[in-house]
Image (cartoon, rainbow, N blue to C red; front, side):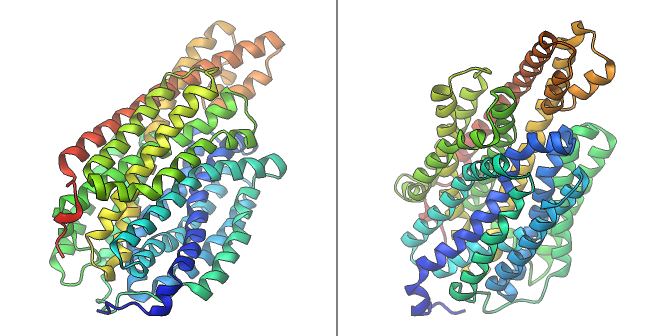
Length: 512
């Protein structure tokens, strides 16, 4: 294995970092830019809450189930090529998504975008690990990588809000075209060729099992709220996931050239850090799925204003992420990651007590700052811990392990938060509007989503009736929103306790 880095590559390492961050930013933004468009899509395409969840999760589903396989392909055939091919596919599918004419066609296009994203995402972190060999510089680079991810969480809604304010909804996807072209050109010039110098044979059974295992798990979680968590279909799907997982583990243990040496998960630092990342993104995605609807439907912000009101999240994440990995080196990964998850829990509890008219310049901003600070304190140190446990030549697979935990955690967050919300919103709304003697069809439509509820209010026969229905929808929304926030807070706090128990405090335990 080559251990010496070309001096020319070392000299331009920070330029390489910039180019990788552009690609990373675009992929992460697109994972979240759609959230601010959900109310618009609810109106324009008639999407139900289930449809909105699938518009968000189709991208995550394909993204998640291909990450491990594409990370391995990047290690074998070249990470630069993986990024370039992924960007071309991502940009092309973005154009497709921008001209979708129905909920189903948008869901399919979003899923296709996930294919390109799965090729790009693990390669960015793998190249960073290969280019930044010094542990201190690597911690800084991973901090920047995490900061870009965190800032994209807020800049996605801001960008989406601006575009929706001035253009049609498809512009939130077309914006990827110029960014993708710039990333392609700069990548061709600056990104070095990087791959495993001693590649093994292709583990085709491992590839197939990893795709099937992660894909079935994510699909089952997405559909669980609609099928019923205890329905036969859901239980059979979960059982199938367990069987596929067992088959994958057996395969990887029985071959001399595995896609992923699953023995690495015996290392508590890697496994606990991976779990912490998954929990952090469970909280993040569940929160962003609902908070954009809260800002637009309940507080009445425009799409642009809704995006701008998430700016404190970008500031909080951007300030904290670059120093989080260094804090972990000083105080121990255990303490910093646990603190981060605790802060995320506090943020959700604060906003869980907010009402429809709670002061934005107060509890709402404070809650977002806690969430952003907590996310950054988790992702930088935990990512550094995961990547530090695997050999550099397997950085693509290591990055994919990190990224799969993000995507599966995020998809679980949307599915479960959406499920908690939907299970409470609909019945509560039905209870509140029972006295209005509304047609059964209108009540059923209003119970599908908050967007549909407000649309029904607009068709009320009198202004007084319209206001009464709007108040009922708002109250029902907050009822579901509060419970979803408290659910996420409980998950985050549990994660903090698990990190304190299982995550080793310092990197000194890493074997060379």
